[in-house]
Image 1 (cartoon, rainbow, N blue to C red):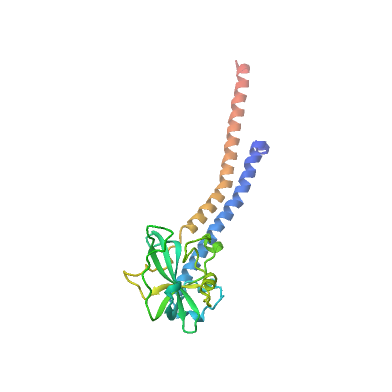
Image 2: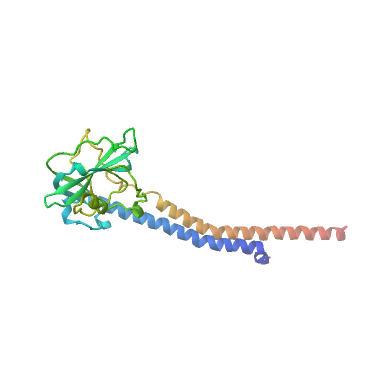
Length: 263
């Protein structure tokens, strides 16, 4: 009675089931690895945010690529803002998801090298191509504290580096690009300002990155694995149901054949 599993219909159904099982298992592990990555990232962010700030010159240098282990690390820098070469970064959102600009101001250190400081978000004006109203940076020598961030690239951020932008507007925060613009040595990466707080009259500083939520990746992983385990169970249920239906059909046919003889 199980020979029906060798029919074309059942062979196709079996092959589909055999394909679905490893695919679902793989999708489950994909979600599991995303969960592990998220947990590790949260731990890294929390550790780096709580660490004692160190001079930015100790962890990066011109042309240096900031490694992942130093992302969001608390750093300090002392120098003088070069407001004449300040630029704004297009298509950035505020803490409540309004679209505007980030203000990127060079901070010239005592040795002449430059730290790029993201002073925060400002709204755009009526003309999106015009330079927005930007609160002036503090004059004189200042000491700033912030989070160390890696240079942005189109590949890493997904932001297209458009050409032909209005004067003093950029799409990406990149120390290499700004070094060419400034004609100075610029430390790799940039500083995302956290202190001093510019207050109500200054740019809106970027909030700490989320390092509490872990998302639903683990739940999705378990779901995929449950789906994978349900496939063979479902296949067996269908086989047993088909066998039962065939047995009942055979019994009815036999009963019909016996009726004339009985009469």
